[in-house]
Length: 384
View 1 (cartoon, rainbow, N blue to C red):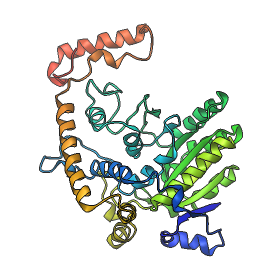
View 2 (cartoon, one colour):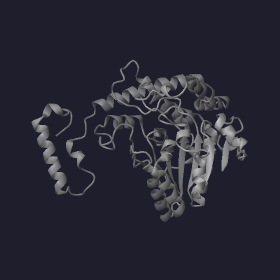
View 3 (cartoon, rainbow, N blue to C red):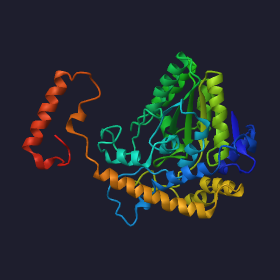
View 4 (cartoon, rainbow, N blue to C red):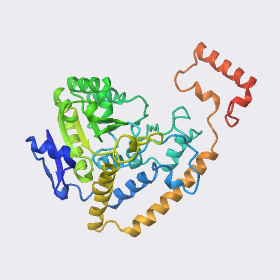
């Protein structure tokens, strides 16, 4: 196991210090020349765009936040995912969870496309079939997100094996939280990838909490990284709040996965300072001073901004101007998405079979009949 850090980073809270005290290797020191040319102002611009989107609709004020009933919050996790994106190429396949919109944003998915998906309108790539924040993009090699936790891991292993069979110099990457490692699909995915020697990176965001379940109630092992070793998978533990360490660790993981044709597990130690979602109140199961400590002393975005500003690539004025610009873009995207027509009723049954089977034809007929009899119970803006 390797623990990655930068020269400027401190070890991440007590659980990393405990690892060091147990005799684990201190890890590789990341040289600035290996990443400084790629992580400049464009990185912070993208990260700022990501951070403005999910925070309790704060970017919408003074508009009322009644457009969506549930948001999955992503503070700090944006940094973990965003900072490794320079490590991947567009040919690499992403099989994500719902907390990685930064991956799509980095690859070119527009704010308008995000808004279209959340409103499920006619311009949505999924044609309104998915619940909000379940994005997907064939153009960007980003497989559509599914709600069940952990299903993406066996899928990513299979995708990676197909890349291997086609002799492509690419890998698959899949994300999971610490709670997801308690699912059977986590073990099935890792075992399949190990046996088939599939070039896939399993990236685990260990933030200490699976909604309200602490990691101490999930497992007795030393974090997630040892689980990979149990399956014969080379594993890396990294300070998930150190953007540069994450970038370096994932770059090394990708190189090993492709050149050696093998799976790699990366455990990023971080913390979820926000609630799990807008339906959650995390202050009921953890102390406010704990949250404030991570928010103020261990904030990965502030750490990264300080580094970028010290190198002269960013300034407070640029930050202010960018936030104003992004807020304007977001409001415009929402207004356009709201006014765009909803997908027609026929889209409920299309895109699966070349010719609809008799059972689906019968279902469509019954649905149309029900709508005609009870029009007030169905949306009026959906074309029948």
